[in-house]
Image (cartoon, rainbow, N blue to C red; front, side, top):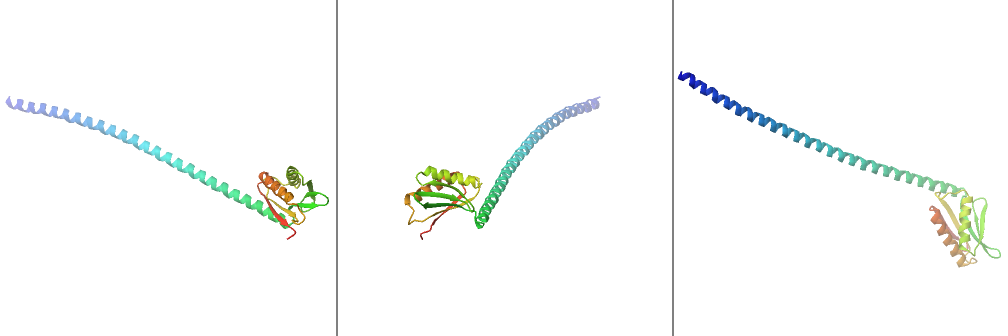
Length: 188
């Protein structure tokens, strides 16, 4: 009977040991599961951050590409407008401002074919208005490149008249940003 008792005690000790091993195994499995979920959450967050960073880089790149294309289009548009103005200049298309004295000083505005208008030299506003209305009459728009020449004889033209016309041209340039005017003194 003693032998049975001894082996029965061993069974009880093994069962208790198996219980402890099972509890430890269960605890390790829970720990592994918690760690894997935490690791999975961290990985998802890192992926989301990487995607956001990629999206930021992509939108910045797209914006930069759009800006570069816009700049290239602007350069092409400006070059085409300048080329058009130069071709027109070669064909005589030039807005000419001439100060002449018959009795009083008058400003005559003409293009390559016709006289577009004339104004007294008394008022800078009248000079400005006749230049603007002449440009409109010539069919030119605010974004066109416009070449003009102020022709005067400094020996016969009054300095104040030349100064008024130059000031009016500067004011017109405020409206027609691509107006380029040269000053030609025929006395020299």
